Amino acid sequence: EAQVTQNPRYLITVTGKKLTVTCSQNMNHEYMSWYRQDPGLGLRQIYYSMNVEVTDKGDVPEGYKVSRKEKRNFPLILESPSPNQTSLYFCASSFAGTLLNYGYTFGSGTRLTVV
Amino acid sequence: DAKTTQPPSMDCAEGRAANLPCNHSTISGNEYVYWYRQIHSQGPQYIIHGLKNNEINEMASLIITEDRKSSTLILPHATLRDTAVYYCIASYGGATNKLIFGTGTLLAVQP
Image (cartoon, rainbow over all chains, first blue to last red; front, side, top):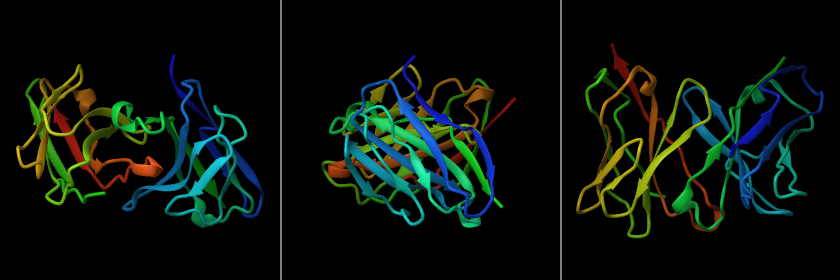
């Protein structure tokens, strides 16, 4: 089944403790992206990647890092999480350049709480 | 990307057609209209997209006005499982493949 898999689904952590949220897709998509969703603010893009070793900042990149060493994986790294990063996170992927024809496929989400 | 305007909420009776409007009066010629939906904190789901012509698939129909300033997503026979937030997005994707999600329309399908 074609899908984007995020792990974990739920995570509670403490301020300052480094964490990684994994994202993997099995559709051979070039493009991958991370969004966060907060009440009243909608979905905001954190980082995106057009292909392996090509990443760039989205609208709210502060406090986050990403890497794209393989086509299928796009982990989101929080080096020193803070309470304002408590949010619902989504990973998405698509074929680059043909977004118009295929659209994004989203993962099921990761609900992160930083205390 | 062009700004889109959607009503914050709508109701629809189960089994009836749900017609969700979207205004995108500043849309440019190369921008497509996309519709996604999000069911209760799940990942958004692609529904349909179009440029100028009306489109139809197994989930919905998309009607785009001739001047492309507005569109309507039609769910022909709404079910309770169609209760969700529906997002209308105008974008050409461009070099960043980016889609900007607004606040959408909360469609509540009533039994």
